[in-house]
Amino acid sequence: MDQNLWYKNAVFYEISVSAFKDSSGDGRGDLRGLAEKLDYLQKLGVDCVWLMPIYPSPLKDDGYDISDYYNVAKSFGGLDDLKFLVDNAHTRSIRVIMDLVMNHTSDEHPWFQSARADQNSLFHGYYVWSDTDKKYEEARIIFTDVESSNWTWDEKAGQYYWHRFYASQPDLNFDNPKVQDEMLNIARFWLDMGIDGFRVDAAPYLFERENTNCENLPETHAYLKKLRAFMDANYPGRILLCEANQWPEDVRPYFGDGDEFHMGFHFPIMPRIYMALKKGRVDDMLGILNRMPSIPDNCQWCTFLRNHDELTLEMVTPEERQWMWEQYAPELRMRLNQGIRRRLAPLLDNDRRKIELANSLLFTLPGSPIIYYGDEIGMGDNISLDDRNGVRTPMQWNASPNAGFTKSKPYVPLLEGEYSPEHVNVASQLADPNSLFNTIHRMITVHKEHLAFGWGDFEWLNVGTNAIAAYKRTYKGETMLILNNLSDKKQTTHLQKSKAVDAFTHEVVTLDTTTLQPYQYMWLILKD
Ligand code: NOJ
Image (cartoon, rainbow, N blue to C red; front, side):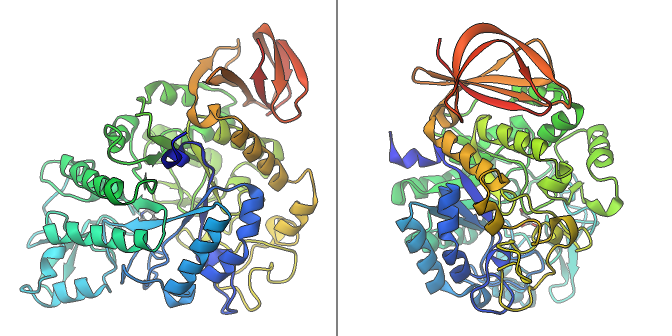
């Protein structure tokens, strides 16, 4: 097997470094703290961690507003601590990728400061300026709760500047070759340090063109291909993971002919997993799976259930969005922009059966799964915190007053009630063979034992009821049969008579008319 294709069959884990583990005692997580927890990640079975932004930043968008691309914020520990983390991760065969925020900087970045102060500055052309706010009117607004325009008037410059996200995040001007080169230099800097690749933030928005929605433009793809060619030429085996929250036909081009992104988040399936679970029917999932174009062999989807943002409902119909809000965000403050700012466990009523079933789908559908930190122990959220902070609360390591996260006061409050560290924490789950942690650990183990999950073909099966998501994954003579009962009722499948082995227990099972309990899932190795 080509080792450079490691991501085809890997388990990923997303980390908010601020929220993971504090080693310095300032109440905020840091890279040394994270390094202390590598044994934990290794025990879980993680192959690659994705670090949310750790660059210097005024933190108006939790680090997605960068003020220096060539450094690590002091609060995280600095460059040496990143190197320490990466080296220690590598000795455990864990790779480390980080966010590359290409589309925009912070308005506090010296480039923007210089750009707005002086039209003749070299950096003025790093950004997108206009004398009118009537350009690119077809581009949608993404942070709809806060922004009413993608243009903001800048007094100093006497012009409007373009931004797809917060006004404090001016977009870089990729029409400027200097910006293009700068981004390659930034990539080189981190790759030379040993970083294994990037999760590329906001990939669709790099260029702007009149009479388009300014997303997925040919120019954007051309530049991303340039970045990929640069990686292939100099850093084979390092990866680019695409954040493109788009419909299937628009997300597919980000893989190019296997010469653009190695991986892309599977945005289309994610909300439909929640629809399927609530309706107890496969229809929405199946509809989108049938619409998914195939991707080149050297590419891979990255499947996810939750991440650090709101559960996005941008790529569903307005009716579906309304329905999802009613079902999963009955309180208005659970909603944000076009989405839902809640974590996995509360979304699924803290019902262990539903949480396991959602993970069963995550680990067996085509793609490499990514776990959002804390979801492996069923952490909750705090909807009274603003923006997306409610799903970014400190990792709960043990039942002690500060959850084992810090020795001082955490920078955001710990969860209370049902999801408090007393009830949900790593230490107690490690000690309990039946904990959610140990169940997810077993799923990861089985996932690794069978290359069919990462490499195999995918074939949907009709088993006589639309309450069961049933499919085969086949690779090099091995076929896995996966059954997921999405409903709260017992369901019986009508399968061809055959022998199988349960992938978890290794018990022999005879398949024929097989009954699944509410929300039960089965991962089987077919024998004939
Ligand atoms: C996508 C990131 O996931 C989100 O957290 C951020 O606010 C925007 N991009 C802007 O960088």
